[in-house]
Image (cartoon, rainbow, N blue to C red):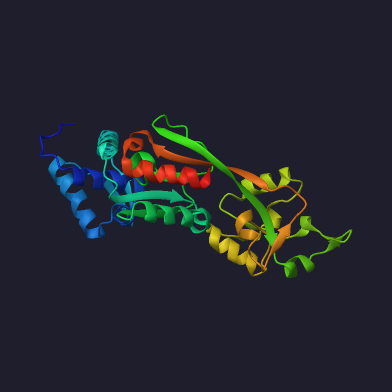
Length: 294
């Protein structure tokens, strides 16, 4: 294949990369904060500059052509290099102005971070904080966030992690829901109860079985990917669900299930890119998170 010499435009190459990764123009436009027509024009302009077709359009989906496959790894390497340059530049700043992005689960964002955010506002009122409340793992290497609060230790060598206090989690339900269950020796039959599942119900089943509850998929007739919705369902008496002990114990409409058992402990890790630890702004937020959560 012959490639013609072209004037390089990174915006067009990035549009091609994200469109390939997302699989559609609409998803790629949303990821880049562009309109779909704008992103489509960038991809078409790159195709015209290179003189090749990069995608096959099948309905609303995109499939890479042979030429697209040949180019995508080169563009992906360029994207990683651009991210590394951005990280290196961000790590050199000594200003505490600007935006620091924190990624955390929905429950952590709603119930764990507020105290930390208050301290940040008092310590550095000129700084802004953006919280990404998501149960997905944010890509710190691509600057989706500066800091992440996670339930696992990262394996990438470019990320650093600090373990903070484990999350104490318990099962909760309304007294009315527990009262309607079949009673065994004066206690609710939890093996016949209904539990509210997450996206990874298999992991939750394994976890409950490890704590003495022999449950299966039949015990999970309701599923939601949103932790705050799950908690609201528990408070409405739809079943048994997990919640942070500090949150559940303060909710008057529910009570502990298996109150005489120890809480379930989940590890918590603060994660940041190694280069960003030299940023005064990010380091300030990181250290405040350690002090508040440690």
